[in-house]
Amino acid sequence: MSWPIVATRTGLALLILILATVRAAAADSGSAAMVRDIVAGEIAPVATDRDPGGVALAVYAAGRVQFLNYGSADRAQGRPVTPDTLFNLASLRKVIEATLVALGTLRGELSLDDPVSKYVGELNGDYIRTVTIGELATHTSGLLLPSDHPPWPDTAYPLAGFFDAVNAWTPGAGEAPGKQRIYTHAGYVLLQLALERRYSLPIGTLIEQRILKPLGMTSTLIPERGPGNRAVIPAQMMPRVVQGYSEHGLAIGVPGNQQGYFDFPGTGQMYSSARDLAIFVAACLDGETIDPQLREALRMTQREMFRVNEKFGQAMAWENIDADGVAIVDKPGGLNNASAYLGMVPARKMAVVLLANRGEFPHEILRNRVLPLLARLDPVCAHDCN
Image 1 (cartoon, rainbow, N blue to C red):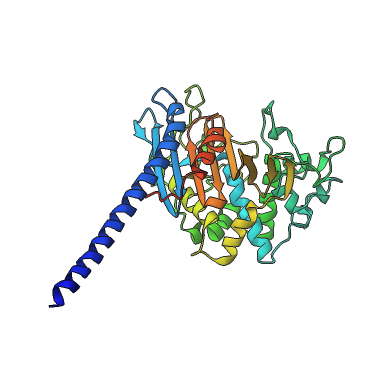
Image 2: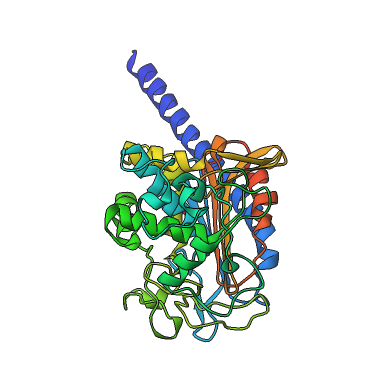
């Protein structure tokens, strides 16, 4: 007589399990929709068919990724943006190089306190030879060349000319290594040279071996600059590369355009996809399955090392922002034909990636609006929607 009771209890347990699963799936779907609505609500108005180029976004939350895509990778070819479209990262490259520095310090291969002249023997200027690896990585060296700010120079530096410029450079009144935050592209070019000299490898090889391969980032590279400022990109990847546009819709350069004021190997821009950068920010926030030293290096780069003001601090390439009470770690980048942004809320293990093939895309929307709104959601679970 007891069998019907057991069967009923078993059936009830199964029904409860099914209902819980359905409710969890509905909650997940609802949370994913909320994330999508927040991002789309802020970005879609500035990524319409009337706007030049396109935008690829990745939102990482609760261990999962959503991709949102707008517009054209190349209007003339009618190619839409996808999660695998390859964009010029501009200054996002700096967070990758900062990770190399952090990894080297954790492995005892170099120190943040090492003078750069320890590795780059051509540095003999009174000021530059005292600048350290850590000061370059945190933009506190004080270095500021004409290539760092408008009005932009008309010529590029060959390697010998670059050394002449940094050796001759003198700071402004009251400036000294480690005493101020002055954003400098030239400082990261010098950091690149120090890394190449320390390891006797090109910067692209170092990044590939130490970061990209361990993380499984297969669509990220630093191509050399070929004829006509065109990046030398493998033929099978070229159909995925964007055409860059000005903020007014003028096509600038060719797909794979490489710009810059430094005319020696390794100084071109990095290219990557929203999918690859989603892997990178996931490793920065979680990273349980990666090499422990690499995981710690990614976290080390995010820690504030210089306080600029009450709302802004400088880490290793990353910037620490207080946005309406939300602690954000982020990095913007841009050229006249490309815009890029990585923003994270580490306390919520949440991040947004934005890549655009147009200059002056308003990435501040993500810092000031999207990330604070996402951070105040209930715990989210955003499904992969590629």
